[in-house]
Image (cartoon, rainbow, N blue to C red; front, side):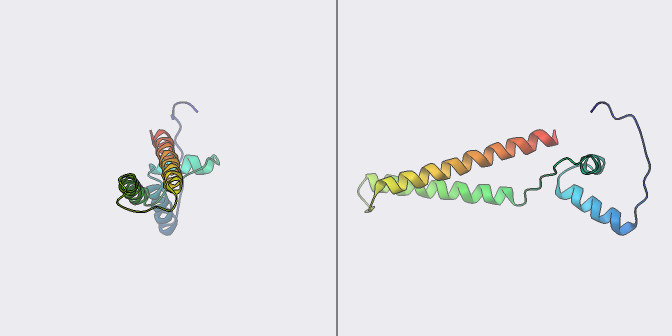
Length: 110
């Protein structure tokens, strides 16, 4: 939208300002950017605990890889090896979606 050269002063109650600042922090945005996006009806995406989800998904993927190796070695019996392959494929799809989401949110911040 161009260079930000205009200034305007607004008044908030202490409680209103506290709530707005908390929301801006949660969205990982500067206060002015958060207010601009909210006022211009832009989507503000907040994804909580993404790092924990990412870590858990990585652990599931590692476990699946270990199970697949053990199944190929004949150390565990699997009713249908295609089931493991299908689950691995789904986990990979989730991983790709998560990565693209992280890239999109980083682009919006920068």
